[in-house]
Length: 124
Image (tube, rainbow, N blue to C red; front, side, top):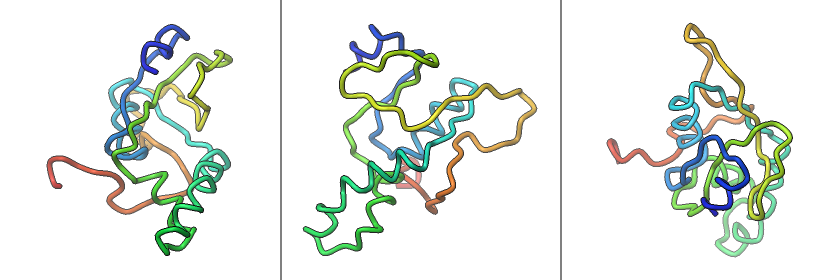
């Protein structure tokens, strides 16, 4: 998938092993951008996990937290130029926006906030 992303013109990318919010923040900080996640796209991703929630007797509402903060996803997060054709297996879940060095806005913007989101290898 990484090779396909590069061939399609990916401008940055990384794995999502520590959760979408934490890793998107790392990618944004390293790239000097702000990432705005699309809440409707996140809802689609969460809905796909509803059967899993039911299978483990969890509230289907938990699925959104899994999407945002679940780790060990074994997938890639990549940025592409606006209008780029995404390679197979990739889907748009947000946009990257340029920020100025004086910006104090958070690196990842979404209407959802999950406390302590994702895995942090420093704090465990």
